[in-house]
Length: 230
Ligand code: HEM
Image (tube, rainbow, N blue to C red; front, side, top):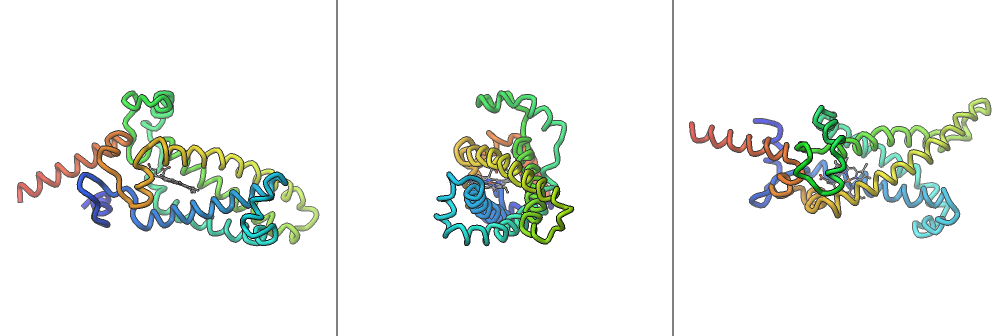
């Protein structure tokens, strides 16, 4: 049995639907999602006095400053788990190169002119790798800032670099995060259900992931052929 077929058996789904995310994948995703939101709000509060009210909402400056690095560790662990469940499916292929070249059709909703995306389109893969490598940089620079007083004075340049890296990657992540939420919640209707209940309709798959649709249909007709022969 293929790994896709094994996945599909994990949880019953309504007729005409397929399982996109297992319970484990959803739990990992939301651990990353909620911890990121906390880091975003408290991080912005530390970044600008204009946004300090965000820290007040989360219990005050002292509590936010204490919890921010710990929640950062939770986010990093979640990103590592994300890597372990999704990295094999996120490698770029030749088709992804064509997908990027045709991105103007994607932006202007002319999906029929796009190369057929598989389970993940090239944009989703790029987001995944950004969060993985960006998460790594945020963790490393964050650790330096957390234990900055233990660093000898002669290593102070590491401290300056950490401030620059932490703030720049965090700001870039906000841009990526906004695109991600917009795409998942508003542009690709049905995607949000997949990270909540796990499944998507076959119509959703056909429209947004035609390559994956072909795989699924191919598998189900092969399974039917087999059961007819038995
Ligand atoms: C908290 C707000 C968030 C919302 C509302 C949200 C929404 C979604 C949705 C709807 C999907 C399913 C997309 C699909 O399969 O077509 C998804 C998948 C995914 N999310 Fe999130 N997400 C959030 C936070 C995050 C964060 C912080 C990260 C990064 C660590 C992240 C990384 C991913 C990845 C890698 C996927 C799978 C590939 C993709 O669809 O991009 N998400 N998310």
